[in-house]
Amino acid sequence: MKRFWKKTAFFTIVALIVFSLVASSGTTNKILSQDIRYSESYILDGSLHKQQSNQLFIGKVNEIVIPTPETTPNPNLNLNNKERFLAAITDKLSTIPQSGTYEYILLRAYGAAFVNHNPEVQLPSKVLFKDDKETKEFQATLTMAKVNGTNNCYLQKAAADALNRAKAQVSIALKSGYADSDCTRSFAANVRFWRKYANDKTLARIQKGQETKILGTVAPPGASQHLWGLAIDLRVSSEAQRQALNQNGWFRTVEYDAPHWTYIGYPPDKLGDLGFQNKVIGGISYWLTPL
Image 1 (cartoon, rainbow, N blue to C red):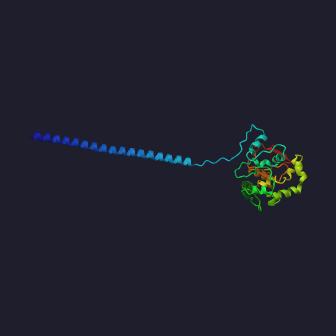
Image 2: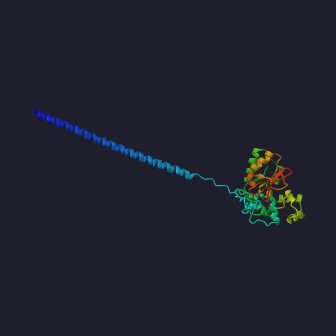
Image 3: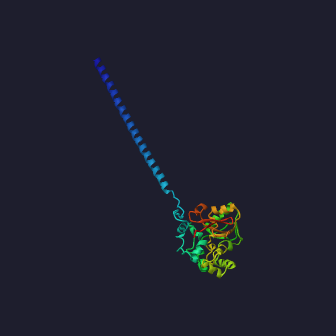
């Protein structure tokens, strides 16, 4: 009987041990399963978060605004100077004047500004206004701005802004101090200056190509760059003034007219590529059309 109870106790203990081991294994498996699911969830969440972050980053990259390049001529350096210049102005003039004509003579003398491809700059579609009405119609399309430190001296805004940047570097005064003569002019002012220096006989000689030097003193009626709001007469006597003007796109472009400055809108190192010819007269540097 005693042996029976010993065997019963032994098997009972063994059964309890087995039950405990099975229960422990089940609990461990449950914990491991939960851990695995948690790990999988963490990995999945991390992957989704990374994917969302990448999508957000890509979205931000796609939202970056790429600056629009300036519209500028792209000179073909295989062409000669004249060909490069004409290529640069072809889209500005309705027609390129024929060589030897009065309009071609005016283009050669005053056409430098036609290379300006700044979209804020307005240029006439021809080199000569026939009367006051045409001049006023063109000038009515211009966006003007005041030249700092002057009394009512106005130019096209891009030209005035560039001149004001130069004036911020060094003092530069108007030639006479009178805005109606030094800055943008009316057709009447153009005629008044013409009659001061020339007459109808002079005009006839210019039209025939017999007289051109006078164009460096005064422009015939309707032909002045001052009518376009892109020219100004200045008192410039120092290298610092000249450099400040050149660096901001202003150059002497009318042969023999030292006070006269034209807004071209390019730095000096670009003018040669556009066909301009640099000519020094009496120690003064001019950038002339190659026509």
